[in-house]
Structures are given as C-alpha cells and as structure tokens.
Length: 529
Image 1 (tube, rainbow, N blue to C red):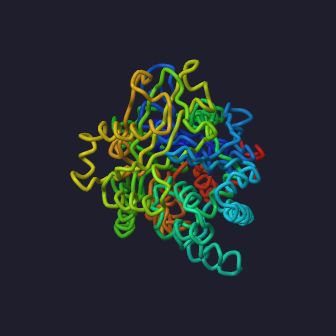
Image 2: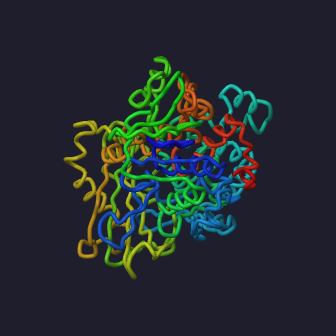
Image 3: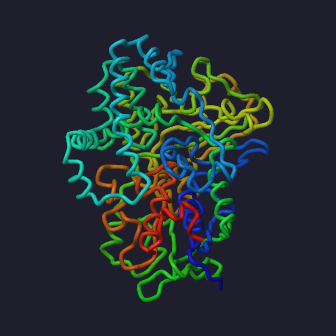
C-alpha cells in the first residue's frame, strides 16, 4: 500500500491536466492509466508501422488555444516541457468534389476576398459575423476553463443585458437556423454548418447555434493548430510537468474501484488488488453512466440521473493509413488546411438528407467525410516523403440493422467505401502507395476507453443546452464533485466545458484548490511548494 495526496484514475489529457496543476500546488500526485500508454483520446502512436505516427483520436487542437494553461503558459508546457504548436496560415477549408474551395485564412480580409468570388453579399455578411463573434469571445472564453456557473445563475446573468440575451437566443437555436439567418449561399452555409457537426451534432439540433456563431471568431482569433509530433505531444508534456513536480504516472494500472470511508474517497484499488491511499482527494475520469461501477455511497437518484446522460447523436469511423508518399489534395489551393472538410454535395438540402440517414442509424451513401495527410504541416510524423493519413467518416454507433455489434462485420467494407470518396479529393491514396491501414469503428472507440467513450462518443456527452454549464453532465455532477462521496472529483470530456481538446482538467483543479483553501494565484506564481 502506497500513500499519496492525490490519486488520479485515468491518464487522458484532462486527468493529466488536473494532476499537473495539483502537482504544481505541491501535492504528491499519482496518475494511474489502464492502457500501456498515456493520453487517452489525445495520444499519438506508431499504429501501423514504425516511423509513422498516427493520432489515435483527437487530431487538431482548437478550443484549448484560449485556455490560460497555454495562452499564459501556466504550467510551463511551452517554455519548459517541450510542447510546440504548429499554426498554419490556412486553418480551415471546405473542398467540394468539383474542386471549388472555401478557404478560411487566419487573415479575415484574405478570407472575405475568397468568399466574394461566389457571393459578394456573403463576404460582407461573413466579415460582420466574425467581428460580432470576436466581440463576445472574451466573455465566453473566460467561462470555459474554470468551474461553471449554476444553470439558473448563468441564465439570470445573461438575461441582464442585450448582449447576453442575444447569446441566449443563439444558444437555443440550431446551427442551420443561424446559418440561414446570416448567409444566402448554400456554399457558405454548408461550410459553416459542417464544421459545427464535427462536434458530433446534427445541423438542425437545437442548441448547436452557439457553435456556428463562435467557431469563425475562434478560428480567426486563435487559429487551428496541432502539436509538432502529433496530438499526443500535449499529453507527453503534461507527464513531464507532473514528474518535474515530483508526481508519478503509471501505465498498465487498471483501477477496479474507488475506496471510501465514512462518505469520503480514500484511494483506489487496482484489478490486481494493489491499493493506493489518497490523503486529500481522488480524481476520476469516470463517465457518469458507469459511476456506480466504480464507487459506492452515491445516492440512487444521483446515479439514475447520471445514467440518463445523453450521448452525442452520432460517432465516427476513423481510417488511419501509412503512405509511401504523402497524399496531396487535388485542389492544390487548399493544401495545408489543418481542418479540411470534404463535401460530396454542394446542395444544402442533400447534405441535410444525409444527416437524416445518419440520425436513423444508417451510413449515408454520399459519405460525410473529412481529413487529410498530417505530414502536409508536420513532416516529422513520417519518414522523409512519407504520409500519415487521418480519415473521418461520420457514422452511427448503433446501426439500424444489427446495432453496434455489427461494426465488427462491416467496418472494413465501410472503410473501403469511404476510401473511394477520399480518392475523389486526394492524389496518393491508390493501393500501391498504402503501406498499411487501421480502421477504428464507433464500437472500437468504446472498447478503447470504456470509462469515457460510452456508445462510441469520443466527446463524452452531447453538448445540448440542458447538458451545459453547471448542468454538464447533470445538475448533481456539474461542479466536478460527487454527492455522497466527499473528495472525489470528476474529470473528462463529459464534464464542463465539453468534449474535444479543451484542457478542461484546469477547471477541476481550480475547484479542488478552492475546496482545499489553496491560493490558485500563488500556485501559478510558484509560491506554493
């Protein structure tokens, strides 16, 4: 039996973030990861053949760029621990099958010039749209990386000003509604709405409007980036930070349960029977739907509400390919875009029909796809001249015919059919250039992370209005603590502010420090050791 101040269950980037802040605060920290490698959904590995580095799940980092963890380098990840982000001039592009492109440069003027080529009116509307988005970013972003407001207080605060009421209105609408309000051309509407659906949301689902409104402002303010060497370099830098401050990270250490005494978390027990004591707190990357499997003492109504958390509407089927030579976009003017949406139709009506099929458990014949070769911006990911292709196909977790279990039977065929679509957009994806391929279905994602990616939801839980701020994932659990079990704190993509790479463990750490009477500002200044 070993004693620590803080024991963290799960070595994903959110758990590592919370642990790093607590280690910097002077706590003796241990992180336990079930898999033989760290990172969870933010990991980069040689999945197919040596020398080719593939991002297992997350590929680009957008929302974390507004996090003070990076913006102010609070943990020293950039200045001390080797994290290096690549910021291409072309963050985002949509490529249509006929070769037309919409390119969103970091430079707003350059972007509007391109939009004016097919719609002068929309070019002007887009400029005003981005400027309005950027105007509210400081207020919006400030709330993402710290403990959230209670839902009632949040709504009451927003209702006190015209600006706040406007945002409440946008938050309640769909992305499609917002796009229709501001723009005239299907091309620009398709471009904007498709990016929002990267959050595993349907274009017409209520509550998606905020994404449509904010994402252009975020892209033009912070850019779209990826760590040099792969998404997992963020997780590796966090491990170096933890170890620098005296903490430990252990892999191949699967936690069976959180131990408790007198209504308080006291440590964890591994499946091997090994026990670790946590004097101050346990951090758990435990999805609310499986909370009862890991801890006793939580009131039954709390568990029942947790088990009703709504997952995202659909998932993704990922295709990883190692290439002898780098794949190149046929639309050369869009090369180097970090986010590359590949559009099989230029009709908004047709795209919405494709999403309707997805909603009903079917994989659309016109594939909803995105992706590209990561070596276009980071040649270190493969041997000289080689390529690392990351291909996304939107797909349901539960198939209409056969449910989730059928994925094992059909995933290679689905990947073959998606590859035929990728080939419409890229040169270099012919059979003789492909060294190897690995396909990960929605069911595979759930197997890969059974305590986080429930129903193949790599974003943890749907970001609907009723699962935001202090109600994410439920009103009981929205402030990272667990009723009935003191000193147990939750962390993960299912917690505030949402799925994706946010560095959201910072908010969990702030809540922990507040509960432990630790001065956060002094921690940042290095005065707490």
